[in-house]
Length: 176
Image 1: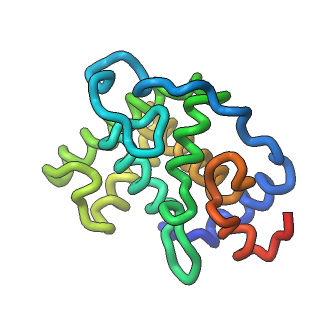
Image 2: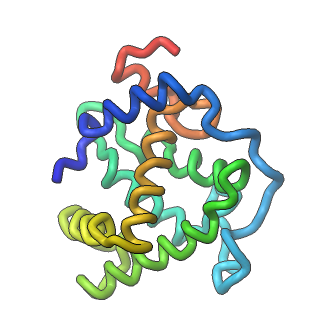
């Protein structure tokens, strides 16, 4: 499976053409996605929702979906911050899905390789995500959700927290 950004151009153009408003204004500072064990965990720097561990996993998944090549990937474009800001605002309804989805990513990673997702080699991370993507249940649903949010964060307007320095728009020659 090709995880490169070219695979996403068709979807990105649809997002750019039809989604000027991807999320509303962020909600006030809030804790982790829900009250479970993560409620006492420290929030990641610059995040309103994700703990340090969750943010590292989201960033690694997003970078797998849109990796750096001749252009910055999801990590350098700040996709993590788009997703976090969205979950603190208009997309807060997806918080529990992210919490359970990130747990599923870790469980799948540990079952397959005995390590946390962020400690896996690139090819191993790809394999874990392919397993999730092919799952007809919660794993597939979560993968589609985070893939959609990654694309929005990479290709959307930078004012919503992603697409830092409009890197994807520059890549596409889009003037905004």
